Image (cartoon, helix red, strand yellow):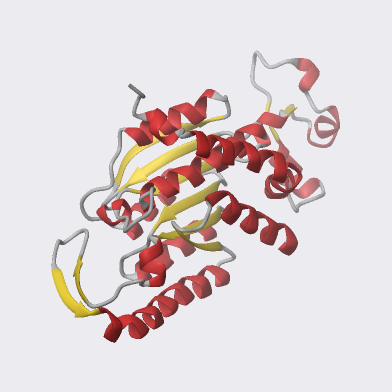
Amino acid sequence: MPTAAEKYLKPEVIRQVSRLDLRAKFIVEGFLSGLHASPFHGFSVEFSEHRKYTPGDNIADIDWNVYAKTDRFYIKKFEAETNLTGYLLMDLSASMGYTYRQDLTKFEYGISLAAALAYLMIHQQDPVGLIAFDEKITQSLAPKSKRSQIGNILSLLARLAPRGSTDVARSLHQIASMIRHRSLLMLFSDLLADPEPIQKALHRLHHAGHDVIVFHILDEAEATFPFDGLLELEDNETRETLRVDAQGVKADYLEELAAFQDGFRRECHKARIDYVPLHTGMPFDKALMSYLLNRQARA
């Protein structure tokens, strides 16, 4: 019998991740290395690339130019110390477990995206960690750059299930308080909550110096509303039901959805946060490729 983690390592997912790596190697490397680069130059911020000497450090690593200027010993940071640290932020709300007729739920679609990005970052020797949340942070995995980390991430995700209510904004504020150093934060959520508190929390992450990417994942049915006739809608978190005429509400629904996404797009743009709307009918490797290409074009 396959293990719980292996169900997320379906052959088609492995093929997509591997193909993404081969097709997009130069794009991904440019994308990630662009996030590493410091825009600062000159002595005023030179110490951002050094740390103080402590007993036991290799004397050969002392920067004697800095010593000549300051009369203090500083050690040159190793490359590993300046690598980008990534965190996969996974929404465990019950609504993430929804699927209408796709093979993957929104949560599983997010796992596929997260696995691809973790694979690509670890290929760059960048450490990647995981934080899962519902109404608050429930699980976390410290960032590592070892290849076994992908398996660690998937094993943890396999033990989790989307259920119950969520508080995305509160969880993001927790994350902002928890992660002190500049990181790449990749959020995977359907964002089905009051937008304003979430947007304020995203702004806080940006102001803290983090590079933030919001992967807004909907089910294909939520994105396209392919229903006819009388329809009974159920709230995945409250279980409340509503009976409607599908054809009569479709235009209004799609208009509301467009406004909902536009609101996030606009606020993310203000904060220089990448907003990536997706639905489960999109092949995730093509969706990710499209995003990486667009980001590189803007760089």
